[in-house]
Image 1 (cartoon, helix red, strand yellow):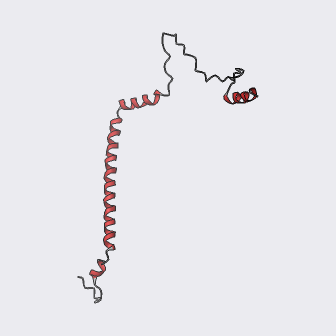
Image 2 (cartoon, rainbow, N blue to C red):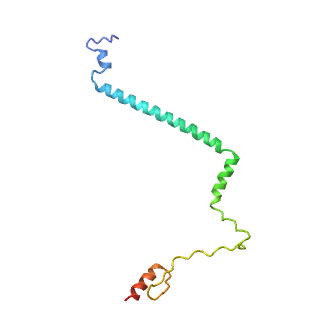
Image 3 (tube, rainbow, N blue to C red):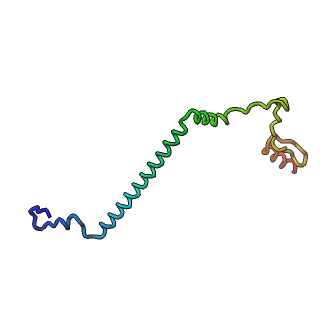
Length: 121
C-alpha cells in the first residue's frame, strides 16, 4: 500500500467497502451496461438495414414506381372505351325514404321520422 503518512488510514478499507450493497450496485451497473450495449447493437443493425433500403430505393426505377403509386389514387380513372359509348351508370341513390302509411317520399331520414309521427296520429 501507499504510505500517506497517516497511520490510522487503511486504504484497503476505504477503496473496497465491506457491505454487500456494493455488490448489488455493481451487478445493477453491469446489467444496465449490457442492456445499453445490446440496444446500441440493435440500433446499428437497424441503421445499416435502413441504409441498404435507401440504396435499393434510390434508383430511378424505384423512384418512378413510388411516384406512380402516389399518383394512382389521385388521378381519375380513364373513361371506358366502346361498349356503352363511355356512358357511366347513374349514381346509386340512397334508400327510398317513404312513409309506410301514405307513401310520402321524404328527402332525408329526419323529415321522414317527423312525418311518420304526424301521419300515424
